[in-house]
Length: 90
Image 1 (cartoon, rainbow, N blue to C red):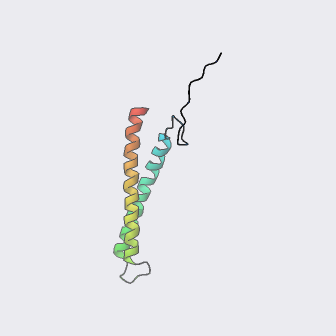
Image 2: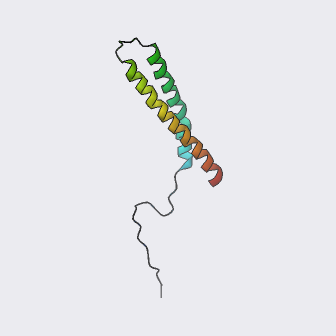
Image 3: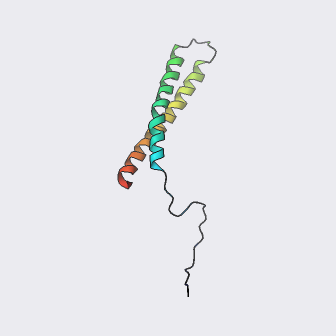
């Protein structure tokens, strides 16, 4: 006769052994970190060299540079986290 154990219902929809794909995260972070950094530098240079009454205002260009800078920072932090986790898990 087959015995069954009482099953505890999970409240979430994730599997019990969910893991992130570190190789894909590493590849994406490695690819997009330099692109975001170049975008940040490009918008910062464009904002610095644009006239005061230009079509895209300096404030708009500076806002884009700050936004891309924050995304670059996020990508760098993610890259560091992935590298540390790959060392310990793989």
